Length: 331
Image (cartoon, rainbow, N blue to C red; front, side, top):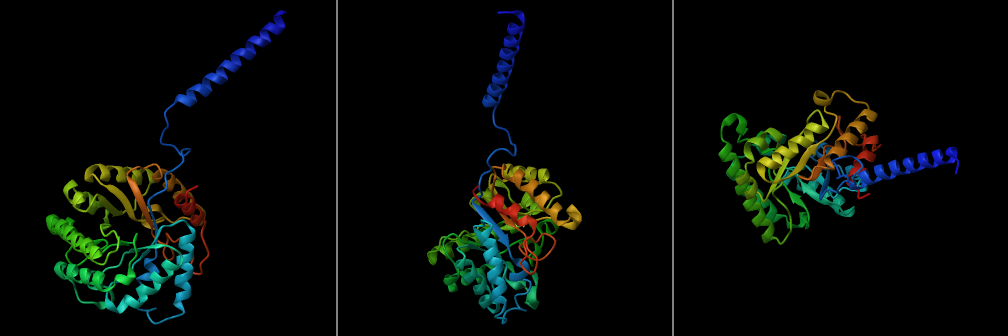
């Protein structure tokens, strides 16, 4: 064998050894938190309809043509891979017929419901008189017992979303952290018992609150009393910060975290974004969230209306819909 052939065989063998060596290193290297990993599918995947199911509830109360809009919005939500639709209609008797129209649409498209309303008097919606804590609990328990037809197994019921905004006040300002905790726990006990009485498997411990409130209120004892769930309505500038905040709160509380509200862009936080920029930001955020083990659910805020909307008022999907759907669906 001449020196020329020997030289080229040697080069070939060295090249093959390098290739196999790199392949072996990649094979044994531990998995890292990167976007190439197959993301988990969240247990709870929801889209919020508050702008339409709450804000214009009285205006559309007797407008039967609005059913077409309800149907379209709920159908589009179901097509994203969502498990739930979040409905913000108040629980006052005046609004029950309107609430039922949303619930009927949800059942039509095989969606569970996250009841995310409240008593109008708690925050002063629609001119209702103020409601105190004890009255809130009593009215809520009675509401569940008197309207069992509204609920199905797998639904979620929140008696008082962002309770800190209501009549009892913000525990960051009034100093009543312990009273706020007791209210959340007692109301949960009453609602859980009420659902047992009507024989419905409905979760009622999704007490959504501002992230700062959660850091103040949700210690380990409180979280344990709420069966290990912490729900935050949380908007921050970066996806890294969002993931970090979730992990830190889970460590502090000892619970699993649900994003009760997240959407983008919020102009004061993210600036004014184009449709393409919204999609890019959500893509980056969902990729980060998909690898946060402490996160078990997301409610995107909101379907239609506002800067974070997924669809225009006439039902045209934004590019963000495709991004959200890829995060929600098992692909």
